[in-house]
Image 1 (spheres, rainbow, N blue to C red):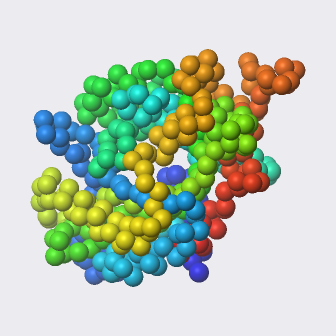
Image 2: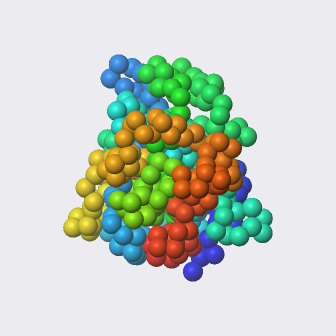
Length: 369
């Protein structure tokens, strides 16, 4: 059993990504590929020549996490061209807020990695490393995605300058406009993720390109109410629990002297997505939950299905920063006005509520291995 060396570095992003790159390079060398270099995914050229930042990924949703027992071994047996990156296992635990409504042209979300303070009770976690993201909606092929890490984890600031700094002239006008709309929490999801990497090398189809595939298994709970209070319809503050298996392209290797066109690279990316998906979809075809919604959109449809209207959400006017506070500065409990709301405590229920407790990251890795 691997010691999963990256799990102990989870607080240090820079070190995690540096080590992942080293493990990938080591695997390419072990495959006998000489003088290969790593490249990021290029911008996708749209039909009008626009350069879009897109997310090449696919996923399947299953009713229960346990259905994914042994999925890594099953995938590698079915797809010998997929080479495991040894010691690449990494895990995350994070809440996700949906910040845009059902009718918005894009989906807007806030995500946080979620840690204990040193020596703090393990059932208490605090948001750090906040990311703010805009995506095209649904689960369409290669959706647009724009995301930034917020300096000093401050969700009160206008994120537009951060997006301009990162994406500049490649930030589409309609996304630029959408970023500036006020953020309001429409609902929450708690996620624990086990992730690992592999390399897809199939010269007959991809030529010299070796595609890097990041695979992840998410176990998650969706909150029943936007403020994570108790919901009579669900008889809980948690509405539903599912698992998602996702495969995403996070770069590629090619010979140092190779010239590769936009179309060659994207052919390799899309071929890899299909190759990984085929055995998974065949094996789980009886169990896959049919949905065209992203996880963030599932938050919105779940909350709406339990009766919360957009008018109620507007009246609540929940802000992301409120869920970072141990005690609310301006809200009190409906049944006891003498007590202020502890949103951080409610957020923790998404992970630790006894009837819906999410398993440890180590457990998920053991299950899927």
